[in-house]
Image: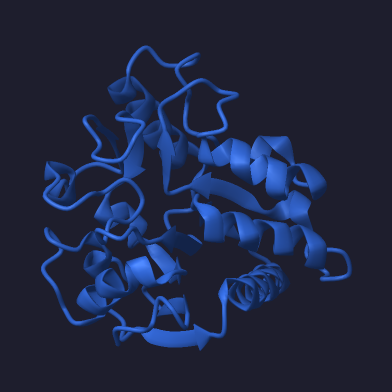
Length: 241
């Protein structure tokens, strides 16, 4: 695992602006090498703030959005138009505002397109095998107050799955109960892991993850990029360090 770098920002707004600018710069740099960047997005309030800043800063960034491939680290298994879906949040915040190629946006199947959460996970895994590059350039993750990342919660048997790219999660302790999540090995097949954390209610989880907690107690302790792992924190989230 790479040694994590910690960046502390004054508040959630400044954190979002910094991450958005860094994402645009990183994806543009990947394109300049001749590769098509692949990213995995997350959900939640800080991710939404980042996404809105991406939309604001994108004009003039030099990034060719038609040559960016978009995935999600996890998704809620609900109706396709549900506001609970991370994909709906991302489309509303920025994907509908940038010239992304719809064929390069790979959503997790919704209840309208898969008969069960297990079927949705299998279909999503197949899509990654067919259209993925074998490694993400950036995986962005939020962290819950309990230390969960994506939809991998403390004590979940999914934390020990090492032969799948995606798994169906049932009985999630956080509603909705059914979700699809990338596994830890899949999340870690990335050049860069960025953890975006805001709020003092998450400070203990941040401290535990960075302090080497067991992944079964604090799943965020188990994610790492191959080249870099960056924790983007606001002062509240960093208050227990």
